[in-house]
Length: 158
Image (tube, rainbow, N blue to C red):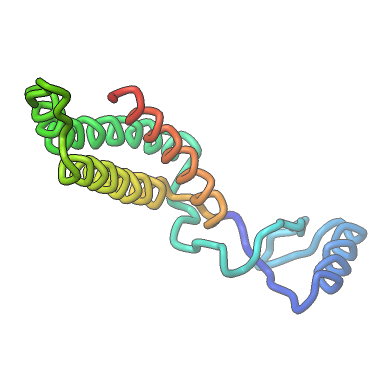
């Protein structure tokens, strides 16, 4: 990767070094000259070192696009395996004389929703991890967008 990180004790120390190297026109390292330092707003513990040098923007975009397909498949899996049996039961229930499905049916529906949400939580988390973001903040933002879209898919399937 053509990047390097320097961690300073304080932001003031960082700002002094960045300003000094800018005034000098950069510095030299292993024969390379004109190396610049720039500030980057990220805490050291949010850097995901394993993803530096392994993901281009187009690769990340492709992984996100594939992720949308995986979300759709997970929604369909949930709809077929969990929701369809419940919907079939409710549709075939005998509502004559004002009868209503009991507590167990309502509780079962709640658990179906909980299981569907848990599936989506995990699917979106796995997709966000596999995209290859260099900072945890970017990964978390992607997760939030994916989970929101997954919820929209679930509402559309309902």
